[in-house]
Image (cartoon, rainbow over all chains, first blue to last red; front, top):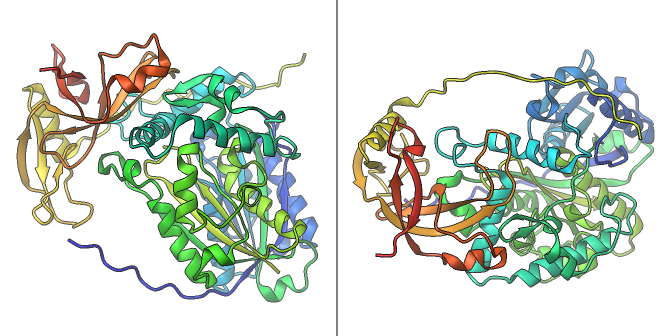
Length: 383
Length: 153
């Protein structure tokens, strides 16, 4: 059966980003989750001169199994400004929480909303092997229990399978993976939020610890923990706010297929392409290469960098410093808080760089790697 | 050096996760050394693991076929780290397209020399023929297929 043609996408009313705040990013936070959420929500509201009472909606992003609590959001709904107010939690990347909050504002349901991503797995994260084992076990639990879980599938295994497939099909070579990782880590090493703080060479990437063939440790995201809060407001309300001056003009979300369909191997960027079509349609972007000046991309392995960039329509148009100027996920990857962090990086770059007026923040949920991948794409303009 | 204060918590939940009619039939087949697949009546895709409905056509997949235990290894990796309750590392895991199947079955692959990590992927190029090796005792679970081994015949 031939696929139906995609539905047309309508332009949307912009949603302003008026407040943004993040914790420091550390290997492990000595804090209760609600303390982290309170810190960033409080700071983001203060930045734009709003109060808890101004919030119409709070959307959180977290995962019970990482938090060591069933319905863990019960702990920090109040910390996200949700006390006696509308609030819900998304068990996934905070990029989707930003989209859910932006939808409520764009629809006119609320004037002000906050999205908060929090990530501090309740394990001694400073012990790298203990952390890796814990996160791999959690990832394995995300897979189907009868077929995929018993044979040891994890996100890292799925990413490695895709990277191996890319090498096998001649699309890239291992040295190119290492060069890209080294460039990103080195670029990010000078940035205050990076958790990989020293430049590295491609040789050092190749010599780093083997994780799953062909992937090495330094080809993968740089683990960190922390929280990020994003305060969104309608144009009318934003006009009366202090703080940031950026607006989201389009957002798209898409989900990929499961292991057996195999498309995650042959066309891993399909969900990004679908999310991009929606986001660009809403933002009125018809020629991304000409209209988008910078992007913060979440490519968990170098093998995904080119496919994702191509799906965003930016494969050939942007220079190295326009793609992941922050160093991207290989410089700092705070798990489920990553989507909101990518938005923070984009907004700060729009604020500080002359010439760039439209940017894209792209994030993925890495829980099960490319399998059932959740993708969020935000189009952001300087306001 | 101070240690971050934490409190140890252990969740100990036991689940009996339902298989349902479609996967029960598949698992019953494994006991008899049979790999059963089902077919979408609309697009003719052959599913293994079988699916109650074709996710694309949204049609019931009522027709069953038996597939041979041989197929092609489309991709594999070797995981160098383990996790609690998981396989002992290093272990090789791949996506196998059984002959006649439209889908990938994920399973372990043996027959690799792990002593030289940089040449691992070259040992079984994409498309290498593999064959299921049955566990001596079969209980109606995916590990009734013990693993896949290179089919050098």
